[in-house]
Each structure stands twice: as structure tokens, then as C-alpha cells.
Image (cartoon, rainbow, N blue to C red):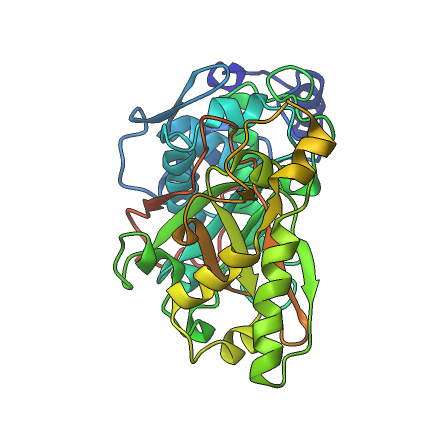
Length: 355
């Protein structure tokens, strides 16, 4: 990683321009990662700065704690955000996620981060309500952006080089939100993935941009229709998920939609969506020819109902979202969750590593 060596400049402005020229940014202005700023960022963890958290493909760069801190400074993180960035790196560098392939694919996916547990407030606050995937929240955007800079500077994910997405989407700059756990009638997402409710976690998913689903739910029949709409929205005839049937997909229910489904179990909801999330094999063969492997009479978006992840976020009203994924072709990139090591961080007095 080029940032591991010293870069000399006469001013911050000059340093920023050099970082841009050398391809070490995401195209937006960055905070210059001076040694002093990096040391302030490292206050956010008790880990040895030289510990390797994972290897980031396709360049196969070693993501040390120090390199992660450098990129967190550039992204505008506070020291209390660093444990979340560390967990994100551990999640995407897990072999089940397949970060090298996620970066190199021509599909338009980006690592999406979902924050659960006490870190939502202790290390943020992270947004989970209205506009949670939009602008305006420092924690969401800084942590999401820090991961993107790590993918660029450690993993070599530059457009047209290590990152071959044919179009991309805005989530390739920052793609992070928290779950509205208090509005989830089935318990927080991470509790279904092997973690305790009191654990703080970051879940990574190789995700497309959100696809809105709109339905006003006032009766049980409306709730049934909502599940049908969600399943059909996931099963676009052009999606990787319906063509490959591997990996996970995500359904993000707003609090009103989640409340309308609260009399059902999580598995009931997953099974109902699963039953609608498919396309006829004959139709896919007509459209795609022999470019995909056929799986019986119905091509489902995932292998099992439990592969449909459910979470609650967003504002009230008629809109929820489904989020298709890369699917990973035959390799099947999967969602991976990592525990945040430190979330009960002392009060930094609101100071930034950039101060």
C-alpha cells in the first residue's frame, strides 16, 4: 500500500492533491493522514498497530491495524469509529465473503455494512431511521467510506483495474447503516447469525443498490401482499440471484411494515418471501440461453428461506426495500458478521483525529 511509506508535502492542500494524483482516494476530498492524526486514531483500539486483520484482494494486501487507521483518518472517522472499521475489514476479508472476487467482478455490487448492538449508539450514533442510507450521518458515511478507501489502497480496487464493476453504484463510496433493533419484532439481525443481543457486530454483504417496494399495509391481506411484492421484487429476470441461486439477499422492512408482520415468526416471513422469489426455468432459458445452469422448474433467488436476511430500518410509511446481491456465481459470496472488539470507549470529548 502506497500510504505505508511517507509522503512529503509542503501543506495539507498539496498533500491532498498528491493523494488524488496517485490514485489513493475515492475521488472526494480526504483528511491528510499525518503521523500525529494516525496516532490519535489508534487511541480507538487496544490492538497492536502491526496486527494483520485480513488480506484484501485482488491485490492481496495485508490490512494491518495501522493501515486501517490511516484510511479511517482519510475518511473523516473519529477514534470511536475505528473498532467498527476494524470489524468491517475482518468481515470482508473472511473467505466466505470473497472480497477479491467481489472487487473484481463486473457486477455492480459493493460491500454493504450493517451495524448491530450497543455500538450503534456508543460508537456513533449510527443512523437507522429516515434516510439511513442517505446523507447526513457522520458515523454511517465515515465508516462506510473508510472501508472503501481500504478496498482501494490495500486491496487495489481502482475502477478498471482491481475493481471491474461495469457501472457501479453510489454505495461504492459509502454503504453503511444501523438496524432499528427496537422496531424489529423478531430480534436484531445479528442474533440470528450466531451472536448475542449484547454483542456489537458489523455484517458485510456484497450488495446492489436498494430496490424500493411500495405497499400501504392496513390489513392482514395487505401484509400477505407485502411478502409477495418483496419476493417478486427480488426475483428480477436479470438478477444474479435468480440466475445463480447462491449467497444471501436482504429485505429491509420499515417499522410500519415490520409491525404489520409481527404476528408471524421470522421463519414464516422468510418462507413466504421465498415462495414468491423465483422465475420459471423455461423463461430464463428463453431469455439467457445456455449461459446459466438450470435448477429444476423454478429458479429461486437463494438456496433456503433462511438465506433471506431480514432487518428493520428506515422511516415510517409505505416504502421498504429489497437488496439483491452479487450472488457470487458458483462461489456464492455470503454475508459475514464480525464482532466489534471494543465498543465501550472512553469519552474523547468529540475530538476528531483530524484536529
